[in-house]
Amino acid sequence: MRWRTGRIGVLAMALLPLVAAAQQHAGHAPQADDAEARRQRAWEARLAEATPLSVGAALDSRGRLWLARVENRHLLVSHSTDGGRNFSSPVAVTPQPEAVMADAENRPKIAVGADGSVHVSWTQSLGKPMSAHIRYARSTDGGRTFTPPIILNDDRQIISHRFDSLAADGRGRVAVVWLDARSRTDRTVKKSPQTDVGLYAAVSEDGGATFGRNRKVADHSCQCCRTGLTWTASGPIAYWRHVFGRNIRDFAIAGLNGGPVLRVTDDAWEIDGCPHHGGGIAVDGRGNLHIAWFTNGEKRKGIFYRRIAGTDFSKADARLDMSAPLSLGDPARQAGHPAVAAAGDRILLTWREFDGQRFSAWAMLSRDAGTSWSAPQKLAEAAQQADYALPLIDAQQAWVVWNTAAEGLRVLTVAEGRP
Amino acid sequence: MKRLAAALLFLWLALGAAAVGAGELRPFTADSLTAIRHTFAGRPFILTLWSLTCHHCVKELQTLGRLARSERNLPLVIVSTDTPAEAPEIRAALKRFGLERFDTWVFVDAVPERLRYSIDPSWRGELPRSYLFDSAHRREAHSGMLSEAQLRNWLRQNRQAR
Image 1 (tube, rainbow over the protein chains, first blue to last red):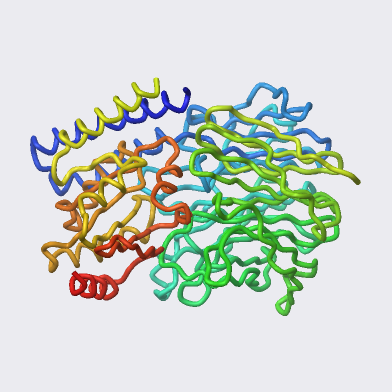
Image 2: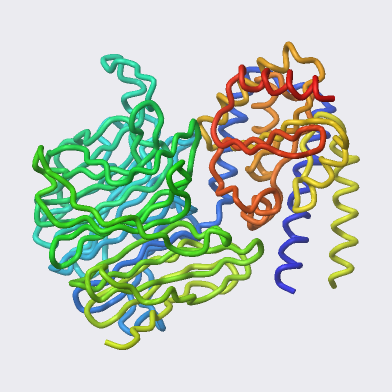
């Protein structure tokens, strides 16, 4: 019933602007110099109407579940001490309403340091299509109050700075990476047939009070896939869809403390287009990296997982010891948007499937650092639009946070099985 | 309820089509591809899917616009995966590239994945996405931009085949 009602509602909404547009068109031809203003209005309408379904979630060292979500153009943070049954009253991180991006590949990020500090980053959409700032705020009083948000991209141009990722080590260091289009407007940069978007980083050494200058980590990233960031023994490691050669869109990692761009997938996906489909990264207790990704390449198609043996990834001659790609989910049900979380030897993989009508959330658990895996578990279905399934894991629990339009926010427990 | 919904759906689509007329945006729903194929029965056509949020799509429209200038009877159907709220901007973009005379549609579903799936379960949402239908409506899928040469080549082959 709900589905039908929703559909009629959508059609009703759909018809009005179409008719209005037709009438307007019949009345007078729009002026060419109105184009920019119209573009702006359309973009603002899109921002106002976007369903802010994508949330950020994190576990702290005491097993509390932290949530960052967008409501009425405010970014709200709350936490739960009982595995998501009850949440504290939300605290607004944004003093003024703003266009916090929270759909599909965009979501607010939350990280809780071992010292209890709460860090939040997000992408604030601006008036021009695809233009945005990277924003950051923190709490040093357990999430009761947050500092006024700051803009991390120090160029401040009204261009694309999007797809942020956040990591905090809890010992005073906080890192944020994002995809940045500033080389597009930089006349000193030689034009290349590859993309003019790159990966940039800002790092704080004082717990997020101040950030150092922006640093370019890599040129030529893919333009609109989410990024990943995890804190290893050799510092923060970023993970993103890169453009290799002229147009091969495979994944790369790089240490923010310098070091090479290392290719970690080889699927030969050559596309002059936008995948809108990234991947996730996590580090386990032994320093191994665990990555999950989507590809539609010549060599393989679908979502995959692999482990990269721990090493000093910041060394210029770092050599990678990687497991063979493990296929996840059912390609016939569009298995997609994988993510990974790790704690000690416990690794949790999640993804989403779609059978043509309904979404479902899936998970797979390993308790030996990714050597063997439980059978895939289907955790829930959603009748309407659904966020990606977000994995959370510690020594005791494995949870999946899944926000859905019809059923609301759910915290699903992953079965542990036999030890 | 189900029949009422179906009746309303029909009414809306009929009204929608009448109200928008030629060169305007039509609501693309799960059965729209069937309707499009009916229109092109026995004829080859190009179905191109794009979005305002996709950098490469703008270049794709540019290429199609160039092709449309020399190909008076280009069998082209353009589908935007954006929402009807963006109708003014979608029409402005099509006009900018001289594509306003073609059959143009916009996705209408709270779950756009359903519409993607109705077109092709193996399409994962990457854009631009094109389908080249021959006269028997056997189709060739393509992700990413198509070059003008590729399109001209396809047109030449499919016109000869007819």
